[in-house]
Length: 359
Image (cartoon, rainbow, N blue to C red; front, top):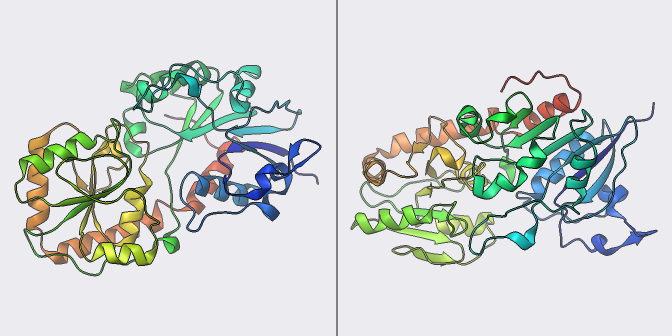
């Protein structure tokens, strides 16, 4: 029996030479993604999402792959389905922020959503948080969707009804972002002495990442030591590198100096660096708005500096045995909650209309 066709729009690795090859003006990756695409190693988001969805769904669908930067036209057949990441008009980006004012009318996903409003064959998928600055431009598209799939932490679903996106109740499903633990092996074996532990951050220096809070922590805690990997300046922090390949060897060296990964985001769908740090074996401290409210994580505040300073002191005073116990709990979380199998199984049920939307 012939499989139904799925048109899938997500990030295609830009290093792949096949991206430039066409057949009758159609990119070869459209149909031959399995044979020709070159994937980074390890595969991190967003490409890890593309890769795992492709290999999970190929058993169920005849897949046509589109790059998230395409402006192709798609006409859906009666039995076709569409799963795609929508996109802003990049010409409206606010300088220095991940903020746009409208969606791109020529984008492949956006055109499908406008052409087929409230169509049960059309599914939107993307990372999601409540920020109007980041996602407000997409509200006209989201209002037309029969079903939207957010890749985001529990926090954003638990607070959906109190957000500007409350209208999505009943039309939104939620997938937790997973990682492949084998790609991020345990390298952290011991922690620094009490009172002398060092913190590190990996990511952008930006408003939504709330790196201003990292500066406040450093300025208010005389003995605090922090390092970061990323472009830009975080005052009071040592820049370890502007950019780095986070290989096991590299992280092994970093683990000899740093003990705790910290993330103070205000609007982060679900920072994958948190999962990676847990898998590597670091202690983790982050805000709920980073996408995580799991008990073993040290919970920070996006706005309350005093709370964060107390938490930093508590981490410094924590017995090393308790830190190792938290890492063991991270392993359990990663194995039970943040897996690609769980992600794929739920996605397939959503596409097959086997789940009831209760959000």
